[in-house]
Image (tube, rainbow, N blue to C red; front, side, top):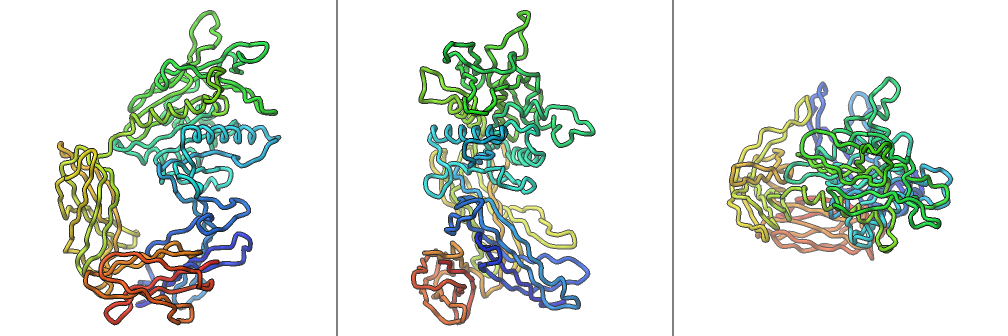
Length: 570
């Protein structure tokens, strides 16, 4: 079948009316297909917007900085012998990474109000409150659309566990409560994938505090405990082995109470060496006393050492028991700091009432991670590729610093599609540039690939080479070559929908006189914006535009080069 129309329509669902949808974009392209095989159709990229960006409030999520409204994506194919399966729709919601530090803080039951009768939910909330306050105390602000965006706050109780994906973040800080089932299997799998996504140049990091984690999951698999048994997670990722409970099992400092009771402390070994922290009940009505776990470090790749030890355990018969209170480890791809206590139980010393133990424990874990994080050969500011002629691609990149780099290479691979799906060819080096930056300053680079083919789908990749010849892939972009008419043109408008003001980004070949024309949904010309050859931006005000769908056309050489559809939403 030749020249078959395929249309993709994207709409967002009103949080207050599930039957109301507002169109974001609609694109129709033609494809040739063999009816006996599958065909992959590429419709480019789509950037979902969060509830806060769109000025929307969801009854469940509020005006969340990271959560989008529900989007409906509909694919419609042309007429054929059976029309019953020509349209397919899917409802999706996204959680978007916004942290400048690429850090996710995972809590549970965070927004609940006291009093809370459920002891598990109460512990979850108090752990989350303590961790967020510790982050505030060290000067980190959450991504809330108002202040700086140091970390993304992710409430696991408001997201389906089967849809967890932590790969966009390089650091996850985890607050685990006292749930008798511990971490969900999907949570453990997502954390493992995130850790394995690191490398020796930039190790990913997990910082976790939870007194029940090792106790629940460091058990042998049986026919009935498959949802909780996960010695691989505890011993190979957390690098810990559960030894037992503390002695006494309620490890609660009461030295500052009247009458004074015994102290129950931990002392830093690798993290905050020699410094003490007290383990203390919160005193919140209904909250359980601290009952931390005693650990042993495990063998494996890299290094694993005690982060802290228990110093006020009762030693029966004077025989020293296991006393490891936490493990700090670093391996080839990741760093992990695991504390066998809950965040809410790190108390305040009487002589330092302004600083919580959670703040010091958090800082110590972050310092350990940074110490073993790895050194990036290149700190990239930008890396992009665009079609600059019918058979040419220009690759630009800019660095902020370069450490131990002798050469930078641009590689190219081609993406093809067959019955197995998309296939990526081997990378080939198409350009080499000597390093011009230093450890404190970067440089700007440009190279041109004159051998690209019209219609081909490419991946361009930046690779650094050190003096020993070790090659490190740094960044990659994908580019679909167009025909001669549209070569060298780009056109985008963000945000979409436009609420008050939109930003138009465009590119035209040097020396070309063009214009950007705005049309309403009836095809009437609303306004036009003259542009000159090269790259530029323009703004579009929605003040005098009615709500609805509009079309931008980049027009040059007597024709329309590119078209973009956007929505004005007031």
